[in-house]
Length: 115
Length: 117
Image (tube, chains in turn cyan, yellow):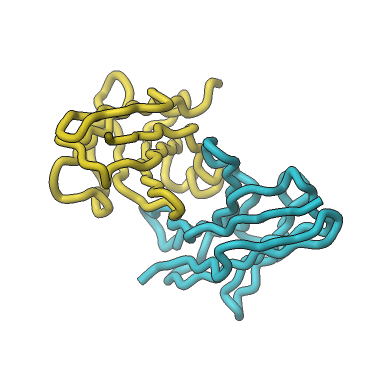
């Protein structure tokens, strides 16, 4: 079955420290990978995506993610966390195999950045 | 370009009533996807529609839930005889075509938060 795993329910980081939010996937075909962020009582905001090319992709608000095909991972990273980064982060995948493909989400990881 | 518009933002219904959630896709988008987010959970796919067609409803509960995307007007997610377990945030996304949706990461609306009392 196609799935996305975010192994950590919550990640706690001190402001100014680097952060990592983990994501692994299990899909057939070539994956298109995404990260979204959700602030309280808001919709999803697109952060970044990997479609093809360079394994390190850069996105909004200083976030980046690295696609690792051998480990089937797409971890989200930021060199220096801000308190305003505190939110719910979702990893998602489209298992592209031609034709119609839907977005499959992980369960989400709550990021808490402490002053 | 106004983006994906969902209304209402908040909806309160008593058990047994009907809930109607509306989604207007981005201009030029003819593909709509509905997702449900239960409290403290991730987003679960419900249904994918093109204009006047349901393409994939594999995530829709078998009873009480239906969706449509008419030729004119918004997409509607309809929940009949609501129960407390239907309380959730319902998100809509749109894309011009599935492939372009993949490239552009889909555009999501702000969601409708349904509370069943």
